[in-house]
Length: 476
Ligand SMILES: Cc1cc2nc3c(=O)[nH]c(=O)nc-3n(C[C@H](O)[C@H](O)[C@H](O)COP(=O)(O)OP(=O)(O)OC[C@H]3O[C@@H](n4cnc5c(N)ncnc54)[C@H](O)[C@@H]3O)c2cc1C
Image (cartoon, rainbow, N blue to C red; front, side, top):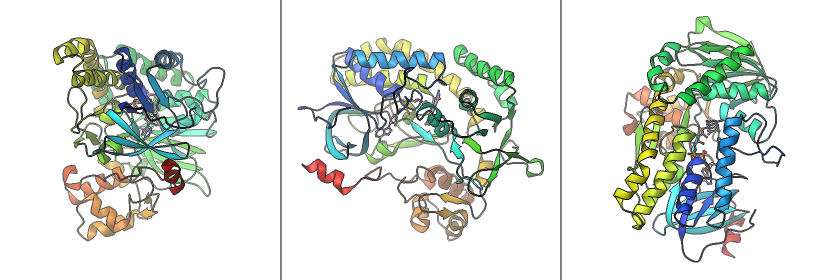
């Protein structure tokens, strides 16, 4: 790992995020002779899906990663290596924000803050798991499904002994297999979506036979191992003294309201929960890009044109940050954004770029059709907002409980920024990454206002806590 970021003599394209979108953008630029810099906060490239172990192991990846993913990851990383004379990768480099007027970003790397100027900025920051509070959700042993996967993939640890998986979407099935492979007893998967909704979407799911086949493969693995998958079921709450010991689940109605008279209590020491993802838009917001609400994933994303240009000059957004449609879509969008940049540089014209991207766009259409197949099943429903009780902590950073939020709403507050000022929910270190979605959706429901009226929490510099010493080191 390089100790210091070496600022190039003249600015080049800078790509934030070394996941499938960012790496493919860099490789596509490199293929056309353009040098770029990738910055990523993780110890190694790969992004969320191809997260590498923090310690080097002989296999390269955690043993729970299946062959297909291993091959995809290896191909991606080998390609990156092939262009190492054109692509400089800074790992453990966290972007704290940007200065849109100066065309630069501020990066924290090795306890030093560096200003890095760019000729173009590609924001490929992916997404994070959406938090849905419920009684007991702050107890040790409760984790996001993706977070628990990272324990297995990255830290190579078994995060618990007996796990219940609740939430929605195909990731639950993959995670169940991975946790089982990692030696955990998987009590069951509780998918909030109804089976009928899944069956109705079969024509859309047929748009991508290999991915559909992956899903069937995971289901048959779980069946063989005796791990039940319950459709139309979800979390109610968790109990325990110092950690999780009891997990209550119940059937959900079509709005995901739990039917409490049918609830069941399961003894387990771990709960993996995922009711969807949120695009990681803090940087696109902080840089002033325009955003819109999109209903199928229930969140805001930056507005992009067909070349993934945002509303800000020289700034592109690709992959999950620009709409959460998975790693295959992220790969394609990374490439398309790079072609967009070639058009902007005048290296190719729009017509040539369209020709070069024709098959990528066909592929994209098919992949997005498949992803939309899961929208009916998995887009978050209002019933989840009824899970927390008045003492449930909603904002973990500032310890704000639901009753404080209710009291503030009772005073007539009608947008999420005023809610933050009144309660401090979203004012902590994570800047509302954890509670922002719940606060927005809850406020919209309680006040019967639209998402545009409720607005979103605005990200501010620095996006992560940073010491004065790191700034001082950057001055030297
Ligand atoms: C926790 C988690 C686990 C997942 N597991 C799976 C899985 O097992 N299988 C699957 O199919 N899909 C999985 N997904 C979804 C999948 O990761 C994405 O669909 C896909 O990786 C998107 O690619 P991307 O390039 O857009 O973003 P990502 O692969 O997420 O890459 C974005 C990168 O940007 C980095 N980054 C973000 N902000 C900053 C910043 N400010 N400074 C520096 N670096 C930054 C991130 O750390 C990350 O490495 C997971 C998602 C998450 C959040």
